[in-house]
Length: 291
Image 1: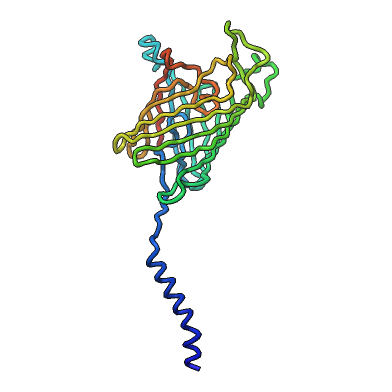
Image 2 (image 1 turned 180 degrees about the vertical axis):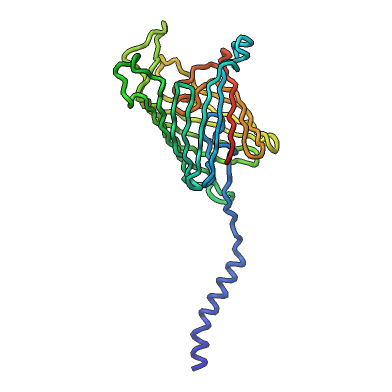
């Protein structure tokens, strides 16, 4: 009986030995998540960074007037568009935000959610979804007699795809769909409003951006949005922005130049009027504080 038990147990013993040997021979893979950006935005475009669970970010952003005006308005500093934003980490992978911007007196609410993370020895990209709705409260019934609440709304959907290429370089691609319930200011060569409006309400754009680390606390940031189905008669331009980030303890301070004074997605993608070649460039900053 004793020999029978030994005979039955030997195969299990050999299998357990093989399993232990395979564990010794197998190299453990480090799958630590890799963060591409330090702030919630590259410049204008949302980055793939999310707010940590339970954290509250307070953001104050300014876009001054064009620098081309010189000392008349102190290079635009006398006239600022301001945005106040709160972003909250509902979970580790979901961020909610609300904001108010002086541009068209816009209220904006959005959600950003993690779909997949870049791993140091795994998946090569971070993919984040972003959706928002903006309310233009500047439109007045006295000027638009048929105005309804729905006419104030604009919807945005983005897929944010980033990669931390190296310790210094991070890149992002942002295919975007946005829908304006009301499209205005499409002009002919004599600056007369064209009717019916040739601009489709549903619009497509693609954003590209990146961050290059210059020093321990400094980085160079840049982003650009290409509108893909803008009407040829449109007065609006593609937004392009360049600036630097400074990390200072509990917050990130972003300073930049941009041809867009709007800071919500549908605003800078669909209603940027500045041209860099004409000096229509605004100095701006984003100040982010973490609570």
